[in-house]
Length: 174
Image (cartoon, rainbow, N blue to C red; front, side, top):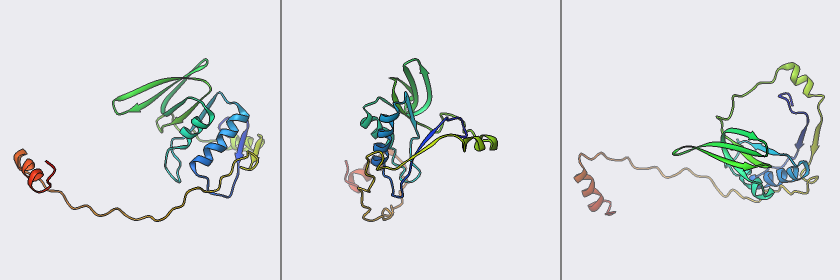
């Protein structure tokens, strides 16, 4: 709100919200609000699993552009440029659409104190998952976490012939 939004919706819960539940909550908000463009971050800081934006697009039945490093809106279309292994890829989507962002999309802006004070007067609609008809109870159970087995150190070989010999006779992969 301090950076320019006119109003906000805050879905509040005490429960841990997993990616699918977050996507379902956002899908209900999208259904109610009918936005032209939904912009989400790429990953969450808690589970770091990069799923919510894609799940939201599937649930809402909207096109998606992921990992956006550049977004250009032109009428009823949006061009999303993203980095891929071979360089850059640009996709064009018809609005409304879902876009997940990459850290290169823009420079962070910081709110100024006067804008923070003005934001306190802007409407903030607080809802619960129940208000949206979504259950956020955890569907996943963490069984255990353990470190991976330590790897043995590698060796250097002096020639291609020595490498082929070791792969044939010791590793038995050739």
